[in-house]
Image (cartoon, rainbow, N blue to C red; front, side, top):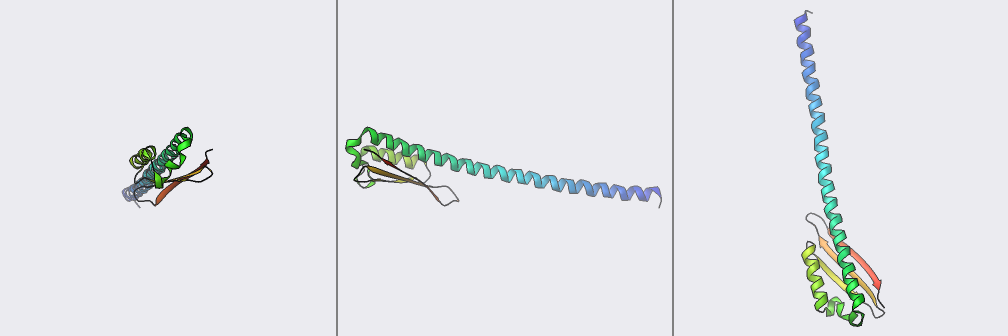
Length: 131
């Protein structure tokens, strides 16, 4: 083999190495983009869970300060304060709905539901005894 033939063969191999490196690098970039998307979805989900927890704790605080009217906070006989809170749930969570149950012994159960786009319905539930 003469030198020109060897150089042409080596040059073709270098081009093949460069193309393979480009494909591997592209797959790495696509993996990072996919990871970023998954992290964004997880962060959004965590934000909604934290918001639901905050809303439930806020209602519990209101109930503690208004213990004499505790039964008015139940969803079935929802008073003005409860209606305002339900409007806040609907405004802050996508498709947000809530159910408040007040037991005869002062046990309060709060369930908040919301639905993110492309996901099933999420739910936050808490119960507390207010005496």
